[in-house]
Amino acid sequence: MAMFRRQLLGCLNAIWPFIESFDRLGVSVQALPTQCKLELVRFVALIPLARLDFRLEYSEQVTCSDASTSGGGVCTSVALSRAGCLAAQGRLRGQLPELRQEHRVLTIGLFDGIGALRVAADLLGLEVMGHVSVEKEKLAQRVVSSHFPEAWHFDDVTVVDEEVVNQWAREFSQAALVILGAGPPCQGVSGLNAGRKGALRDERSCLFSHVKRIWKLAKKSFPWCQAHCFMESVASMDEHDRQIMSQDFGEEPWKCDAGSMTWTSRPRLYWLSWELLAQEGVQFVAGSDVTPREVVLTAFQDLEQVCQEGWIKVDPSRPFPTFTTSRPRPRPGHKPAGLHSCTQADVERWKQDSYRFPPYQYTAKNLLINKHDVMMRRSICWVSL
Image (cartoon, rainbow, N blue to C red):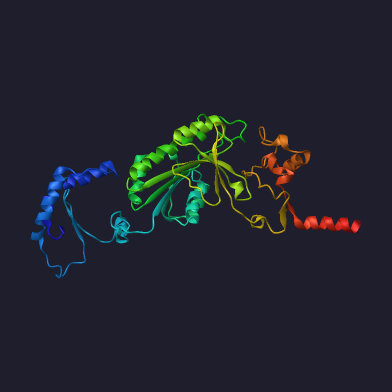
């Protein structure tokens, strides 16, 4: 209204410095100064004098005059800016109807890898309005970009500061929920690594400390909505490392193994900022002084969905062991995991496969065999008889 009666703007002398102060503070919540309140009351009282007949013709060209305390000028528009496009779509906070059924979610993946957090949000049916991917591996960034081209990419968690998180808050100001997920490098705490240094001494695993730091920044920069966090790491870490990470996060972890609902075991620890509720397919197991509490998720998955046609598992009562990266090499690595439990035949299979995976993955109970080969051997035996 004041744009049509410019004299009204002369009443807002204290309002302008107050608005400009937000450029320095970023996204924040402040009390309205007393002088600003007085100006707003005076402004409202003068509105009847600004009567205007809106049936008059108007120009399609938008003009803008600078009423700041540090400069002056007049300009006209030539096209919509990026912020103008967002405003035209109703994406600026405060311009959407209050009664909304959906909750728009911003996902933030620290050590994001190939964007599993973003994929999980889709599988849950969440309305994802944006994804921030913090990942230094370029190949992983390409995977995320190919599936989610709108994702924001940052190379290093150490450079994510308050200014960066404030930038996220300004861009995704319509978020109703922020979910921050993190899987810090686990090489320094993994039980499979005979030379592990621990959560604090390993230069990779010590990055877990940035999870809580960035989560606190998110809660500060998104004061209008909830900002939740979860962190994941290997369950094979020792009790000392688990206590260190729990103390930093502020919560005790839950142990959960995907092998209870899929065909692959993957025991992991999860630190959560929200409460878990019991329901069908969810069972809680109390922990002890030396073992973490556990949540058991049960489900059924047909083995044929994960095996190639014609192949069966030797021991279908057990899930496959945790999958690891394929690393063929000319000789065994340092203290390979599970070697003491392998037979000579298992070791030979491991050798023939260039020591590609840990030895325990080559035991007979973890093998797949071709059903046609089994039927052929049975037929030969029958003919021999």
